[in-house]
Image 1: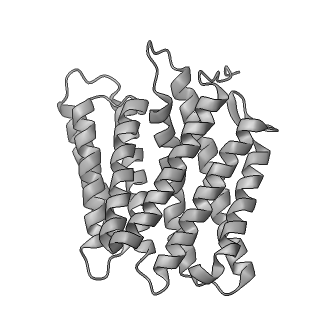
Image 2: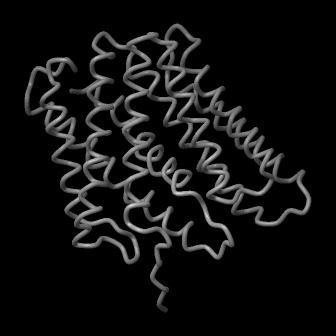
Length: 277
C-alpha cells in the first residue's frame, strides 16, 4: 500500500518566516514580562500563548462545535495556570485533575452538539490540545526555584534561538529533506541542536550552571526536542494547507501552531533538567 505525498500549499517564505517571527515574539514576551512584572508577568505571558494556541488549534484542526471547543480550551488553560500558581508549593501532579475534568467537559460538549459529525476526530484534537496547554503551563514552574529566573531565561532563549535558526536554515537549504512535501531538512535540525547548545553555554553563568559540559548538554537536549517537534508542527501545517478547503488557513494562524507546540514540548523537559543539571 502506498500513500500520496503531501503537497505544501504554502510557499517556503510563508511556511518559515511567520513562524520564525512569532517564535521570536513569543520568547521575547515570555522573557520580558517576568522581568517587568515578576510572577504576574510570567502568568500573563503564558496565558497569552495558551489562548492564542486554543484559537489557532480549533481553526486548524477543524474541531466541531467552534464556540464550545474554544470555551473548553480557554477554561482548561486558565485552570492549568491557577493550579500551578495558587498553591504555596505547586506540583505538576495538580494538572492531572485539570486534564481529567477537561476531557470530561470535552466529551460532554461534543455529545451535546447537533449533528455529531467528526466526533472522534474532534475528541482526539481536544485531548491533544489539553495536553499541550498543560505542558505550556509547566513554564510557570521554571522560575520558582532558587536559580529559576535565570535558568528559565536561558532555556527560553536557547529554545527560541534553536527554532528560529532551524526555520531560517530550512528556508534557504531544506536538505536532506526529512519528509516528502515538508520543507524541513536534516541540516536545520542539526543547526537547532548546535544553536541551543551554544546559547545555553553562553548563558551558563546566568542560568546557574557552572559546568560548561552540563550547560552544553542542557541546551543541546532542548534544541533537539525543539527541532523535532518543530518538524512535526511543520508536517501538521502542510497537512492543513493540503486539505481541500476553499479558503485555507492564514499563514499567521498556522505559525501559531509552529511556535506553540515546540515551546510546549520543551517546557516540562527544561523543568526536569533543571533539577538534575
